[in-house]
Length: 183
Image (cartoon, rainbow, N blue to C red):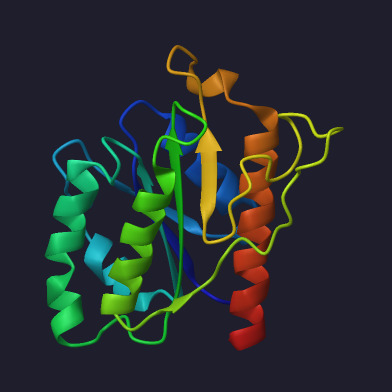
């Protein structure tokens, strides 16, 4: 069984809720980046032992949060020794707007993975884009390169769109299946 780690920052709890849904179906372990941009004790060792690392950050001002960026910059120690080379990588993000420039955040996460010589896993999900589609359908936000979710700015994590939670679970299952296939 592959060791999957979901490393993420969550400012208001919405990204954490997505991370939990991805972990539920992938069997991954959660590794939260704190409000100061730091990993918990042993966090770097946990990432070093992982077969797959899933990156998660809210989209703030068209990119990752500063806390996630601090983590990414600190990952240069692993980069220097190519410690994450050939590990699987994937990413997700949440913002209040349907678009909100979330693709910029996913591109940042993808670029981070490529700097580390990792193998990127997209969603593998078709979009819900017919006239009959509803906001609660799988992949209604229609992202292929990574998971995108949208939560209204005045909604609590418990009020997140059920379709986005279901999409996060489908994404987690995809990561688990790819990890097993390559493991």
